Image (cartoon, rainbow, N blue to C red; front, side, top):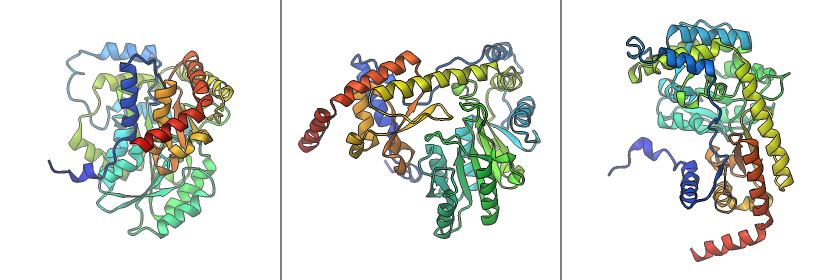
Length: 406
């Protein structure tokens, strides 16, 4: 069979290789502690579930829905931005509901990117940030993932050495996978940079509410004066309300860009199931106790991970936001790369992590650990890893011999 053009542009999905080993180990009876995928394990809030149940099964709500989101949901998202960021949005023209932020990114790529168009993307970064544009025919140039002043000279060089000139720049803070958080000052410089170079900012803010420094909640790029001229921001209900499987997110910001996204979506989908949209509006308009509870759970897990893995001999820098820790591979194993190290952890320690190479080649010295298991399981994972690290010399000797044989 022919290799299709767009499929040829996609490398093998790295995480699937770890998933296969994980499935094989579980089939053999192993109790794998899965810190790989950022898949929330907490239930959605009760009042949100009640609203879903109340709305399901009515003839009016079982019909096709609205591709850009029902009006009540778009108003709820606009109210959230006003409350949380002090940003005023027109729900009719500056808010589009998406099937999760991932779909929003992919369809925005379809809307704005043509064959050969250049996009600046952080490396490492969440895969859809690059591959959404690759599938649309675009070309990716890497820029640093760190939101520091050093970002801008590197981005300048990327623009100078790109032909044609880049059309857009992707940012993601709090970052998946690195957990770094941007300041409002960084965003001010970013908006000025985008205007200077006439490029679009696409900001992924999926982890806006998963933070641990109560005095400094992550800002939105749209808080910057003039950002609405050049920026669209993507948010998600997945982590804030543990609604990952509901596939509910938003794109907000520049009217022209959102109009293009709306037009693409109108050809591809009829929007999320209406009861899900109604329940999502109830989440955004409802009490925020559930958000505080979510943060408390992730903070407790983060502290347990940092403490227990540190005792086991693997130091974990405590993330200030997101549901992930971004951790350098222990030095003895670093030469293997993140994929082989991740496979070893499943086979020898019964712990699954996400290999950093899956987020870009600059992530290959790292793995990502997700805070998706309870404290007890995290501590058990640390004990397993501690035993594994103590056998590092023997394990590495065996790996080298296996490679020689193969």
